[in-house]
Amino acid sequence: MYIGISKECYFLIELLHRHTNINREHILLCLKKIRLNSTFSELEDNFGISLSYASKLFLRNLPIISSFLKPFIVNLDKNLIKRNLPIAFRHNYHNVSCIIDCLEIDIQKPSKALHQALTWSEYKKGNTVKYLISCTPNGLVNYVSQGFGGRASDVTIVENCNFLDGLQQGTCILADRGFKHLEQILHEKGIKLLRPPSVNAGAMLSKTEVRQTKIIASLRIHIERVIRRVREFHMLKQHSVINTNICRVLDHVIIIACALINLQDSLIK
Image (cartoon, rainbow, N blue to C red; front, side):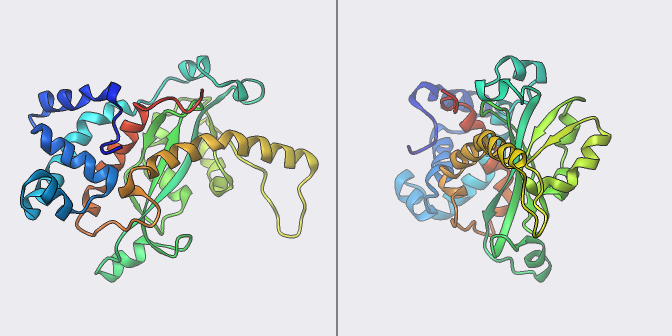
């Protein structure tokens, strides 16, 4: 509830302390800040330290904790994924190795006009940082990109992060309609993109296309559930606006959140 780690995985705090030499209380401070988005004033009272020291500890220790937890976000082999495929995928979608979507985090309006323009999201009607998240069909996070300005399109993010470098030939990716213009790039790399059929203005979908759209939507729900788990970390919650000073460590925050999600109970029962 307070730090995003279950009782069964609480030994992780001791491992973190042993491998990073960060004080246990300081690890708990960082995790509590991410999980509950407590203000530094609250952390000052809870941990008996000054407000400025709480802020300093958070910003200094977060990259170290992130580098320790990053190995929990594993890019699995497609054959291993296929062996553990949920039943819903096994008939027609057994080649699917990952499901992708983008996540937007609201941030404070930057002071510089250029940064305001780069982070403006037309979809959210505010300044955001955008991440590409990928999960396996059984709900395990296997990739999270670095942050991009909210202005960047989904396709631009896929092209400019190193997501495609980690994919094997013959891989099949499940995505929504927003990734339409990605098909040509993926085809050249020997990767297949599976998405709902495009809807043309004034045209109706055929019965087959409607059925296909419903099936793909029911399978894509796993990435939506992963993102919902990410949002359970209150710092990454909808409409919890990230302070400008913390934006520089936001990449580390999302890595920690995704790593801890992978240690939670499986999404597929």
